[in-house]
Length: 639
Image (cartoon, rainbow, N blue to C red; front, side, top):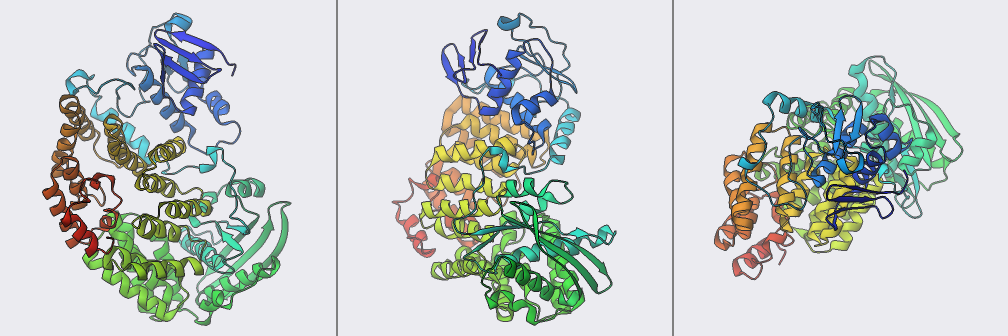
């Protein structure tokens, strides 16, 4: 792509300086949309195919859904150019083919064939313009068109490859980095897939506890991305930033299991070790420990006997199978799947009351459930504590049980010394657990204003789970709590480039922009998040238009008043303005201190999981001197 200057109407596009100007004023456009605009302008009037765009923008290493990424880039170009989908002045879609640039000063052609249909999930105001009421917008598309768009969005993967951010992954200093690739199910029966997946997950845990000072293991989320894919060992190792890969297969018939495993050194693809194991399903934990021990001996890692302690108790086969099915349900992360997971873990405990893992796994469901809007913390948190304690009675080295005890201590008991002790125990036993790092960051360090440590823990989590978009999205909030708003915005933009259809990311961005007074952007991101979450498109558009109108007529005060009104009409989400904590944010922004403080006290009475954020929530900066606020901080032991 040559560095050339293009002029069209009031716009100037400079490839040499990578700038887009409007009447001399620099406009903000992200890297990928800018590169696409330069490509299209350089080929004025010509069709540029989607395949050519993908090759130019991403080269040979295409790890994302490029159709979605291209649509998002085109939408952002149109937004900044104040272009129209229905009557384009600059970017014209050739359906199922690609795009043509039709800017009149570059090529003199402004005609449209009217065939543009599918790029924008909803119309948006151009950057730099004031929001306008709904009556000034074009008529919304038909319900059928909106639902077609929504259906297309839902089938897109919720996360994409963070490697596309063009950052070479670095292993934690001084550690040997491993990846356990998804074990292959050789039974020929898809209903037995849970055994192979469970084997993968448990091997990751076993490896993570071998020698915490020297071994790091990539998390399940990132490892499972390679399930069924035909990529070379070198490609996988490069994407994950590891030196060793463990791959294997599982055959299962009745209570018998045959496992084949091999350890590969990524640098030269040498097979360092391979073995076959035959076992009863009841001895699967011992088999996993044997494999971990063999790997440790191959890379000359010092073994901690405690890491292999689980193998002492053979497990009833029915309990093992139920536990693995429960893991499969848990990993779906939906309300119904969490309920199914709890049922399976209960079956496992009924079959073998002395099996520690299902207790810890069920405790996780109860502790994490309220964060996803599943369950009442007043009921679920005590149950999670009870189950974690029982798991640790059976196996004191279960890192996950320590982590869940820490979460209960932080969000329910406000017992911070216990929370810190249990988090550190979990990280000592398995420092390769990315979510232990994340929970330590957001459930302990951020509430105590230890912001740099919190950011460091999030970075460790991301290094261990590089393809986890939820972790990338949460870092936006961690930066926001630290008042590092530019870092938060940059983190959002980087993640949005590779995962534009992850609803929670846009929810985080909406809160960030609202905190900064960037209400137009907050409105757009809120609408984007709700559309991606599956809300009816017409309802989302109506809500968005009401917010635009309120902002245009009354500025920030009217914007927050509209947030209050909308919060009364929506079902209460696990996070957001409909919760007592969320209402406190709105009241604080409106200057209604008494109502804000009353809502915070209601959040305390309900043990709202967000309450531990109150001392770092930017909306409450004006409340902090109030004696009632300080009293509540003392009640949760954060004063």
